[in-house]
Image (cartoon, rainbow, N blue to C red; front, side):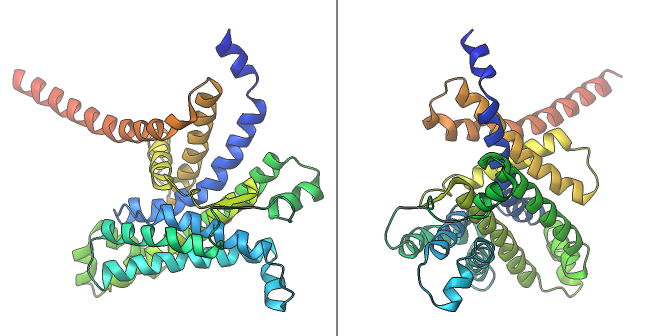
Length: 319
């Protein structure tokens, strides 16, 4: 009965989970670029996600009457600057990796650690900043269209995700975008064709973290506060969403559909999390649940492939 009662009261929680899932889906698209296209687990993500939220919050809260400050106080302008801040974080990781030849995972860790102090400095040494008394994209849409906070988050997230997927689909069809994808597939071959792979890696890391920063800014405006720890575990959430999308929609062949599957995987992840929390799981165990989901999603396909190979070998031996 407790389970049935919990499931019956999940309407608002489910709506909020879908809205958050779509907004975080922009971050998942950024992780998709480095993890799936370049085969790099970029740990900058945890820091650049919070960076986007911190920059966005500070710009919106800025009370200066300077014309530039007034312009940047607009939530859309703040979102654009947060995206650029994320790209700057990716640029630093890219320089450490490509110019100074630091391994990508270590370069990401170094940038992530640095961003913890930088984010604190940006927020004036405060661990969090509330946005309760200022306008955001979500609150403006809620007031204009008469929607709830969760519904407005969904609409903004869906529109942003569609635009980003369309732009990425176009970009990766261009010459530089194709070179970027080829760098991940076969770096030696594409280098032999005269492509500067260091440049493509740098561009990919900037593009990835730019999307992560954008997602952080959108989540910040949705939840009405920025927090220094809001990006903690973001890379795990991104990986979980990607593998969920692949497991459920692995039959997609079109690149745009694969990108959409990553966003859908993010929504499914947050819906699963909402259901589990509604059933009474301690929120402190959510990171363990996320790690288990990623581990299972990564291990099951490998185990299944090995089982099929073993079965085929056994049947061949008998014949």
